[in-house]
Length: 279
Length: 315
View 1 (tube, rainbow over the protein chains, first blue to last red):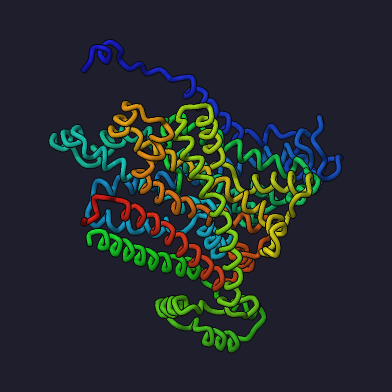
View 2 (view 1 turned 135 degrees about the vertical axis):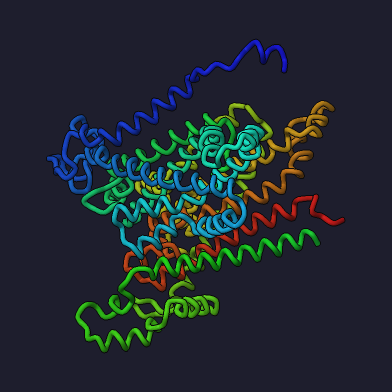
């Protein structure tokens, strides 16, 4: 080891970029949690400003196709777009990580069967999988959440499995096994802690994909159903506003883009390398 | 021979996966009670009529036999009859599939050269302002929903400037007409695909640029452009050839949104309409076509990797 490496031990201080990133994530979470309470009007209230009104002081985002305040509609929709996607992503990643580690540790036929199942599921384009599920089971909230979760389990599984295989081959894991530790302890205390950072970036990326999947589905009219609306559904119901360039159609679409772009750029900064983002 | 063997194994594994996918699609769409007879006959009907129709449609058979029948039908080009208008599914799908292929082919024709150009130039001028701007733009574009790009495009070019139409029809009568019809949908589809493909092209080139033979060439005084085009590109060709079909597969999601926005009479629009009317035979067939296309592109990507791996060449 060189002198420089000894002289400058790694400090555990967060860089500005990471602090900004954490603030950003908290801001989106706060919007999802408290958005509806910040809204000046209830989601269904028709205000006295006409339909597809432009931006104004009273209605910063204009009004929608029924003359409802778009700022309030967007704030109410945050809970669906951010919240539902968050629940689905947590489910997908929890299952994916558990199965991935299981595959990496058990190997053998467990690994083959899980791998084959993941191959099959990953071969169905996400939006097409969503269409088939909706055609069969309808558009209730639990169905949408489970569908999005199942659709993204294979990706998370593959990522976690590859990581766990790497960590599993390390010396300290072998030492722990030689000490006679049980598999559960080795997984919990030795393997999992060494996977956290890459798993977090993977989680963020998958969250972005789930947001895009669910809002795309809502945009097709096959996601969250009226009277509730996530941002994708808001774009759909106001789509005729494009002919008047109404903010009602642009605002929710821009809101989605702001959410997904900020998270993606954050991850790109975090991981510091260009991960291939295909599925 | 080694190479042929690997490709054969890869194709066989792809076919097995496709078979599992067909089971998932079939089971998924048949798991709920209540079948096609209700959809066709409605609520007020006699039990005899239901039983007769069930027999005619083969719904009285056990599940595995129905699956085998469906699979055989699918393979022989007869995936059943639509529940809504009683037309053969194959007849409904045929023209729609051609329209979708036209749209995606045009997109690929624009996106692939553009992505290679951006990927290669950003690798040549690595670290420059152009490279950094292109990178942030690409990362952002991948995360933008298609319907935002499409709505902004419609507002700008169809409503404000009136250059193109907001609806897309699959006619290519004259060049200007084709431009009118296809500019917006093709542009919308291009953004995300181009961005991701350019990033992967750049990453593949940079991977090669870090190797020691490139360092040697650089020390000999080779210019950056020649370094990339002459020395690095050859060895990066494999990963790049792998990236192209892999990224084209992401078109299969985007095309669903784009066809609906522009009311383009393609296969994806047909699938969405079929989901709304719960026309299961049509949904199943469309889903299988999408999955098969997806797998074909991934297979193509893998074969490109195998072919470009010099260690697998026997001579």
